[in-house]
Image 1: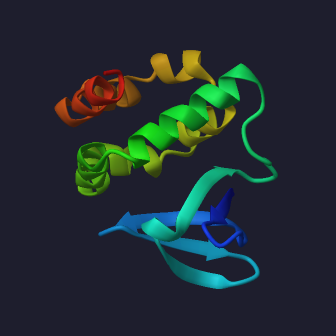
Image 2: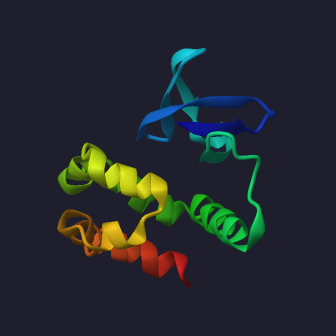
Length: 131
């Protein structure tokens, strides 16, 4: 579950189902399945988060803002939507559990996840964001 804050101050809690052509599809317990224009989203965080706190939270927020503000990076991210390796990872409950828990060692030990990290598009995103 994610906490999605819109530019108008509205907060929606739900599961992000997809991102296609700049439109997020979100499944919310209270609102059902809705679509939200990417331009209307201020932040996306873990359910119950009230923004970043501490150094790690500040770094993540800064990275998110840098990525969202860069149209080239967003184009690269959107290009990954139909990537079969990414789709396989998103359907793998073990990998997703490690991602949500921030279990870096479990992710680093997973060959499917490491294969994804080594893809050219991921490397391009990494290089662009680290500039």
